View 1: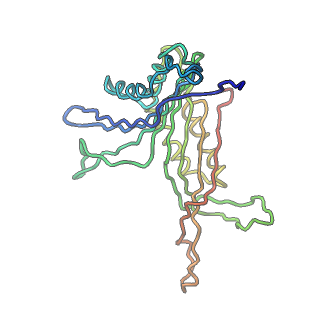
View 2: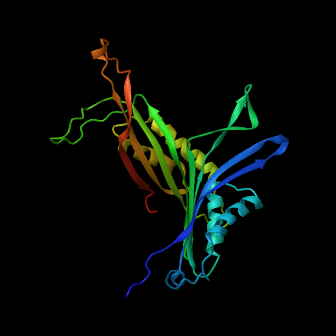
View 3: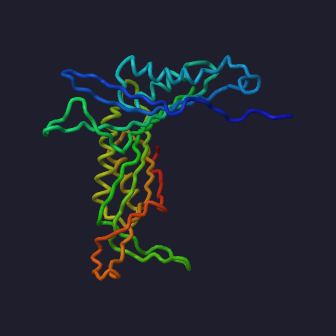
Length: 287
């Protein structure tokens, strides 16, 4: 049969890494990462002839994650992903690209007696995300976050939308707006000798997203998405673009009048499904 191998890749998915960085005075820092690694390249003989000469085992990829973690500090998730991608790109001449994605679950330090405990933590639902691609002709690095749940009980409306024969939704000038935000942003390639403060950039970008969500007078979730993205790009010149994914987690008023009680717009039913989903990429002009 006359066939040919098309696009292909391989790697190790969801390598779980927990590292305890032991500081002075018994103060520990806990890092909790899930790392996924992929290689692209010329691997035809492995598929067609079963010749594994050019295949780096995925077991070795897993060990590389732990080896890098043991050799020194992890640094920011973006830095860790970039170091792994650069190492894997150099693993053989047949490799044309290496992609590393990192999800980091933050752990908050517990407070005991009003003071932060040196080595006891609680998990946060939100995740810090990072991804790096390195190829023979260049690469890129991204940061981001996932599962940041935001809600405001006022300051959001939705009216003047298109209607057809199936439309039953009513205009509203004020409603609950809730979402589970996921975002990822791309960093500009730093100039020779420059170094990006990924941790600081992530911290400020996150705060800009949160502040804008809270303060923006929303006419729709699309309206708020654009305002959030615009605020991040204005505040972080090292970013070239940002992608936001905002599910609309609906909260529907419950009619309590059949119970003999007046409606005061205080009782709602949270509907996790189905939900609206608004996504967009906002890019800096000229990027």
